[in-house]
Length: 326
Image (cartoon, rainbow, N blue to C red):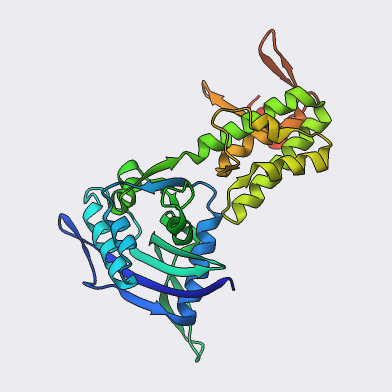
């Protein structure tokens, strides 16, 4: 296990009449092996989320002041929980209800992770093999969470990667209450950065390679992106350049990327934005199309003058549906 120490604090949101309260006046704390086990699960689940925003503290962030003053984990957790409770719109509360602040060490770095987790019902067998109803934290489906790399923040408070934020998908009000409570704002748009990197890859391909090598460059880029995303790291552009040269024989990607005025040696990975490396896709006018790049010119042909696609092979289920309709 990569977690060497951990303390985890819990509280619960209680939905009342026209207000939301905290169940406990002071958060409960779990430490020792149980906390380390939970921290491992929460950290892993957070890292696996490929869609993150990278943030910085606002000048008036009270959480930032708490961190700088070196308050205890208990005081920090209670402050965050109270800030979360006050920031929630009563008309649009999150479906999840368990508030978590995890303070832990992963490898050589210290982290603070604040999250809102759901609870799921299950069945537990006791020692007498008798079934009992139980509840467990839905850690795998973490949707609202902020992770602060305290080691990075301590060295460089303005770092682009010190604060990572997962935003839920259920509406702006619910999405933003954690950002409001912790006093954070966007620092780096991971989706835009990923798309810009992909544009550089496509420009490099058009300048240097044939169709076979173009496919290889895209595959190498996608593999490097996936590997970075799986460990929650930024993509190193020099490393990508070396991988492209080693596996395709094409040199100079780093120099091409460095031509951009806003070039950075590292890039966050917003994994869903990388699908254009593998597929062509688009939608509109009642249509939605998506197909693998290697099919273009083989089973799918594009006429740039007429701006039409011709399919010489269709997916069996689509063909079956068309035949039934005809």
